[in-house]
Image 1 (tube, rainbow, N blue to C red):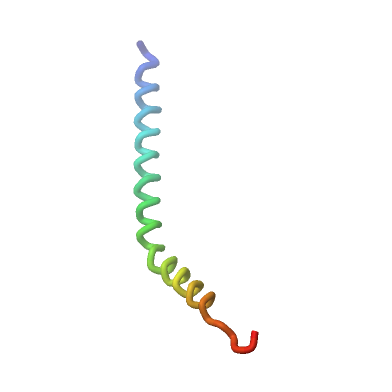
Image 2 (cartoon, rainbow, N blue to C red):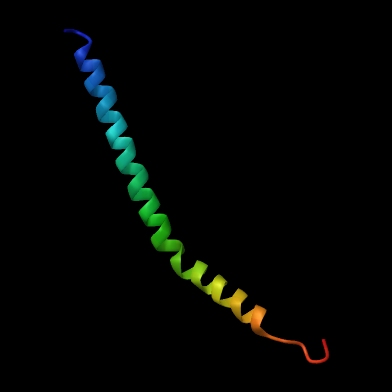
Length: 54
């Protein structure tokens, strides 16, 4: 079957693309974790501060 090689190539490309997306997502989550936590902490602190007389 001459078309079998094409299907294998498409399948391999799809699997490789999926692996790349998973690795990219893991790297982005790892690098953005601290800034996101700092932002959430800052927002929580800002919400807890009360202004006198309001």
